[in-house]
Image (tube, rainbow, N blue to C red; front, side, top):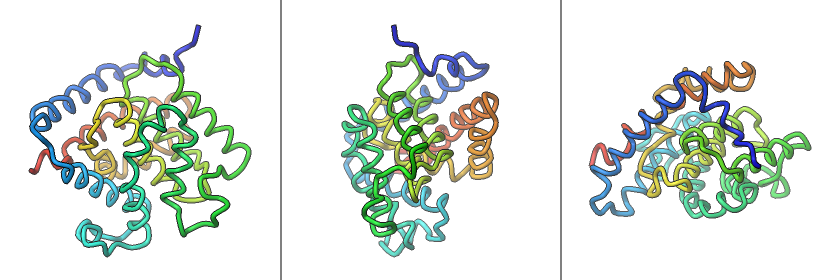
Length: 240
């Protein structure tokens, strides 16, 4: 019998209610606004907003207007390139997470690192961490998909398993989990913008996830629920 690897997290104080509430809010947004025919341009806008926010969190100084005009700096260009191919990786994430994560890094880091390290873990410990994350994604769980996405994000961002661009990879993987697990199949919410809106909390809780033991992980997943609500507020569905 397979043990649910995230059962311990779903039993922590505040986690079930917080994730149920944010999922209800996302479902209401997508149902009330998204069941109308949503054009591909709306998904493209969500991805663009996400690429900009993720790039800023990675150190970009480009504005959303710069990114929209194709005039972003190198980090923003990397984020946009990644976002343009990200959704096509959703089936791969479900079947072969290691392959999907490697491709995400290759897209993000193209031209920034040597070709022979694109998509490859930095060292043996990083390879082990990625295999463990892949196993988690392939193991059945009763945990909410939003919670799975939060753990995937924090695990990649804190472990930094690739030679570069780990923050971009972590946030892209988070969005892809939400798509592949049916939370947001058209990718219309903008979780990256939620993290940017709560940047101080985002950065401190990632440190807590890495260094703070169970308490730090608990704090991260509680924070992430707030960030997803902010990401829903940043959706183009709110402003169309």
